[in-house]
Length: 421
Image (cartoon, rainbow, N blue to C red; front, side, top):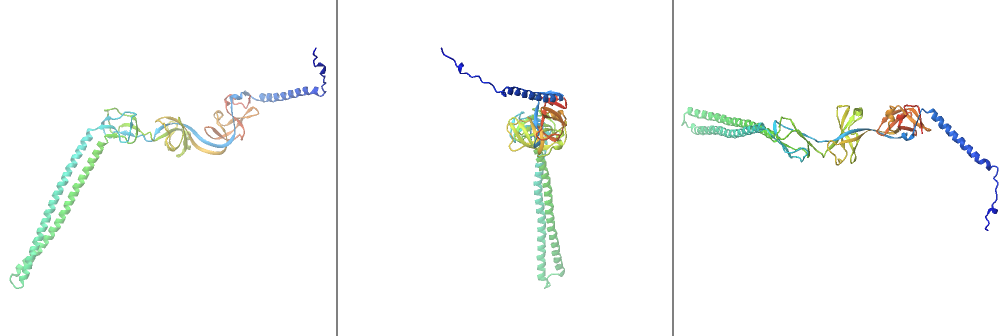
């Protein structure tokens, strides 16, 4: 038979101190549990409500740069979207349809206006008539100048003849061949011929000036007729409506073969190469807006930045319209009238005490906040300053490092103390 090891076992006796160690540990644990329970009970007993921490969002008060901004809605609009008008009462012959892509100079519509066509014919006829009259006046003027010059030359010949006769009398007058009275007559004839020659020359000069003035007058009439004809031609040319820019037909205001009045809108051309964002800014931000202000536009393909380029001078339905021009290259894939959201960066405030923004700002009116200390949310008076989409500036009532309930305070019912478990 195999023996076991029982004969080798030795019974040890515990020391007296070891007998009291376990009861002491149990007593200390009981006292600590009682103290914690007492603290929790006193906190719970002093609180008016108890709310689960899972229903709350708590943020820490810190320091940083607060970017004051405003979230607004808007839509993509064309910076260049000319509306084409009828220049005269006419019948419209459309050459394009809505949505067609066109290039600059393409014919979009042809207007039929019999009145303008007749006016052009009348002006052209008047111009041609005056042109013929000017040519005839030039011929008459040359004839008059020739006649005047002929008279002047004839008078000069007569003067020279009288002068030669006088010279002959002078050569024989000293020997007494001719009578003295005949000599005097020859001298008077020379003087008379000289006077007629001078007057004929002056008359020829005056006739030339008169002829030049008549030609200039007719030329001015011809120029007026030419300008009238050019204006009539311009109005007829404007009956052919051409695209002023590259783009596509956005809106057609008329139908084919429709009769329209003067200055009636025909169509709108949209240039998609130059798009801007038109924002609807609440009236409360109107005083803070300024040209050149930065904006961040949220697009389906990502974010784009821009600057405020125009502001409407009026308020419509409690909103102010503002235009934002993209920085750098225009984002791809934009469409006319596409709805977008944007953030207007109004102001930057560095090194301010701030906390994450939440519903507590609206529910408490920005005058109170719940600060969490030792598992209890205490209703604390505060004063807030500038606000942004994500943060709120704290002017007084809180200090850096405080834990603030920013969401879920609607369950507190404005209680002064709320236990959080």
